[in-house]
Amino acid sequence: MQAGAADGLATSVVREVLEETRTRIAGGAEAPGFDEIAATVAGRLSALRRPQLRALVNATGVIIHTNLGRAPLAREAIDAIAEVVGGYSNLELDISTGKRGSRHSILEPLLCRLTSAEAAMAVNNNAAAVLLALSALATGREVVLSRGQLVEIGGGFRIPDVMRQSRAKLVEVGTTNRTRVRDYAAAITSRTAAIMRVHSSNFRIVGFTESAGIEELARVAHEARVLLLDDAGSGCLLDTTAYGLPAEPTPQASIAVGADVVMFSGDKLLGGPQAGLIVGRRDPIERMKRHPLARAVRLDKASIAGLAATLRVYLEGGAEERIPVWRMIAMPLAEIERRARAVAATIGTGANVVDGRSMIGGGSLPEESLPTKLVAVTPGRALTASKILGSLRARGVIARIEEDRVLLDVRTVESSDDGRVGAAVMDALAASQGA
Ligand SMILES: *Cc1c(COP(=O)(O)O)cnc(C)c1O
Image (tube, rainbow, N blue to C red; front, side, top):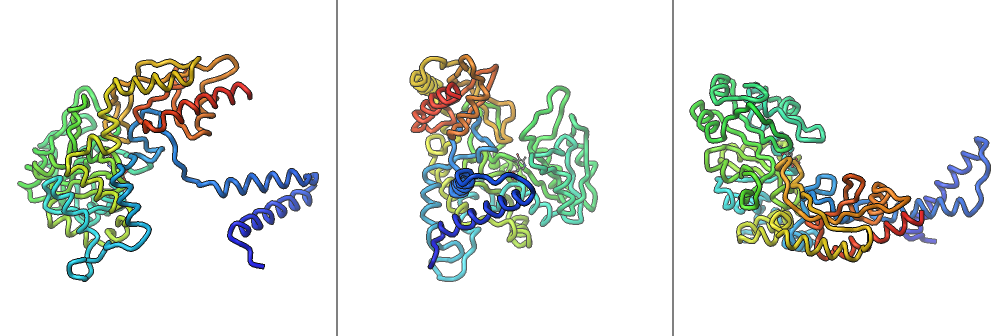
């Protein structure tokens, strides 16, 4: 008899549970009943059959939420990915000649047009972009960096460690709070390969501070005939000041003032798939493309398709309407309030609408927030906010707690999910009350 795949899984789980039960009995434990064994098998099987990575509703109000997968994609990107991944594509085929093509040629023209750079490429993420840049352009040589920019991005990605890994020698200049242009100029020697700037994405130094602008750094680098590498972090292509936020450096501005290589993430403020985008002058970018690490950190066809579609939305001028992170940033307060009131009304007793702040998040614009309207759920008797939060999480809705209230921000919720949010809160209240 041929067992199907599902039968195979069930059989192996039954065997595994029986084996564990026998071992426990041999060790002196009491024999479980049939029902208990059956329940263990059923529980383990349903956990295995459920997708491990599932869609969630982000009601935290943190727009680029690292734990929740950073940027949600635009419809255009989702469609482009779906079209390409189920079959074959011209990933490395030049359709006009029938000869072998390069996957770089898909994104390069779009990135160059958006940033006015001479050349471009894309890799797996921005961490990979920085590692590749240092490995290809500065191995065995010195890279000058401000002490105020020796940062840890998160997940153990620390600039000094990445330098060591790429065998570039870090030359620290200035102090934590103040680094001047002449500090860089004084550190340049015949062994220097580059000056590097790292965007302080996830922290701020305030008070008695001074740092060199990218324009001045470009001038110093070029006078000394070394490269200027710019880890721009977020990859923000739009002007954030139009939304009441502080100015976020843009890759196109770095290119305009003469940075040789600019690196940024695809899935932070750019609002596309996970990627590290690299734009700059032709010579350093070609050296990066030819480096052996480039192959190890290359981007797959799904991400290339999604990124190309995302970049086209920018080129057509539709980013604010069609890229979800920008739609969320630009969402009018009146619209948020209307939706929050509708959600609060479905919940009824215990829910009201209060003023609050939505966060940009994701290592972009730290501390920066936008005014919002929150649905606040106050736990009744015999209930705690953290219990409600847990029940919501089990129902696929992620919220937050402040002052023993559960807060939900519809800014980061697709409006078609508003009903689901209201229903989940009602279920959570009923379930917690019953428990
Ligand atoms: C986020 C960030 C990185 C890492 O980018 P990933 O795409 O997450 O790998 C590197 N540098 C800066 C300045 C960042 O903000």
